[in-house]
Amino acid sequence: MAVCLKNLRVHLSSCYDDAAAIKCGQLMKHVYTRLLTDDEFRPHLERGDSIVFKGIAKAWQDLESQLERLGFGAEYAVSRTRKPWAAGEEDVTRVSPIHTR
Image 1 (spheres, rainbow, N blue to C red):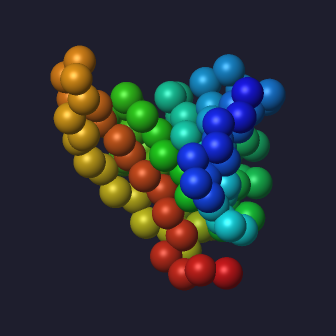
Image 2 (image 1 turned 90 degrees about the horizontal axis):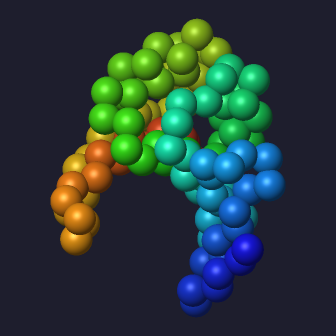
């Protein structure tokens, strides 16, 4: 399924039931509702993708440790926010490249 909003294209990933990918120009932003294994996470990091984890509030410490373990700790930043929604608040943890490639 794809939804176009101006320059954004949202594709539901065929690999994961809990994932979506948003492409804006050459940059990819992936959205997940669960933590990824090292094998799932590494290709995103190697490409320089931004990854968003929704609904897993305490994941940021695990993500920081995983980034360090995979050797990307100096290249990525982990941030958390809480966004208001009609049904309440949602925790969002973002993993973003520090430098653009």
